[in-house]
Length: 149
Length: 144
Image (cartoon, rainbow over all chains, first blue to last red; front, side, top):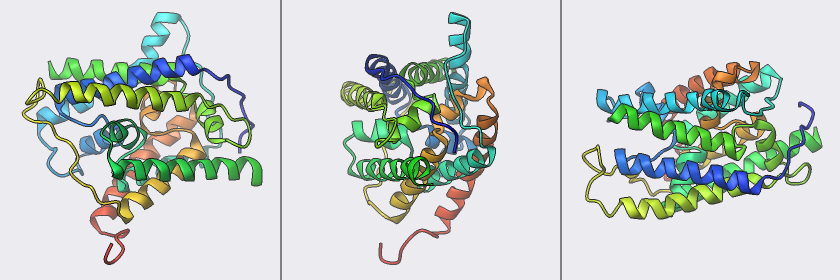
């Protein structure tokens, strides 16, 4: 496990960022009638989700992910600096983490955005169950790796 | 129009992830470390985002159809079943290990840290494998 990088408590910045994420989710619903779930959008793009193979449906998904990817570049152009980030350095750990995140969100039909933001906003009991479950295993995993191992 | 609006929505989402701290794995892992270096900031991300979407969804659902799509496409599944719970549990383990969920993984690509260059392709492979296992009903308990 990598050394713990300390971070400051940023309630206002985090709340503002959260509101932007919520606005984006509302745009995706209002414009495209879809849930702004990143794992779902990615899955639809890969083409394994049934019924989403139409080219027009694929277009906005590619554009949305391109927008996500371009966000830090926008920050760089606006401020002259990349956003602050400390990424764990164990490549084996990150490969395993990526596999688990991809597999789990695909099997569980959603991630922090689809179940978290959008599902909670829809008051979906299914999404609430997913959020409680992934928060619990995430807290257990981090706690285990930092305090037990 | 669809492409421009898709790009704009994605950009706003990504800027939200960066501003909120969600795109920094250190902040995510400290949020999850409730008995250690706990940084509760990310509760404000989830709260602000869900509340905004809760209000906004109800405003846009007053329309009969979305602006540039034929119909609202809300999920119809309601069952709290084995694939949902096992998938969410597995996702949580990966999130607690690497500090990235899917959105921040895409947003972090351009910064090209070694960790994300390994994480993102692994995540895409995981999505394909997860979809395959779902269609094979590997995680469907009999009678569930």
